[in-house]
Image (cartoon, rainbow, N blue to C red):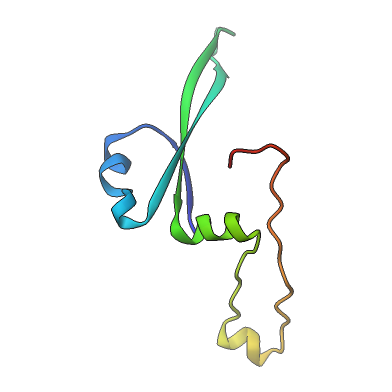
Length: 88
């Protein structure tokens, strides 16, 4: 499961395509410069198919390694909690 937070850029635009299993969400954000002036920036969240599935099902799949299984670790059910009214 991969989520990349960035600004628009040509590399991601070319590599992280729908055909390759990625989706894109743009968010208007605000930032302050060193002079205190506020600027609007457009941030981009790139989500792969596994991230989309986790968001859709509210479940995060975790697989134990062979070493963890040997150590009898427990893989508890994990649930992804989304902020109310979140577009993410």
